[in-house]
Image (tube, rainbow, N blue to C red; front, top):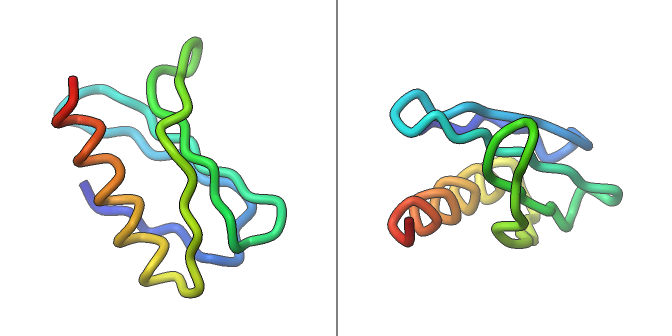
Length: 72
């Protein structure tokens, strides 16, 4: 899955075509990003990411999502 969130974004959502899972990311300060994974109706906190750049944010989103999928 490819993530293309900008560090300056306060919110983004993505949907994985392979699993059907939705990923919701939000931040109030654009440094700490809370990630929830599930469906629109029901999701669970998957983790928190601290990122100093857009590239780091997207790399950490990918890593977090892949770890989540691996634990299913």
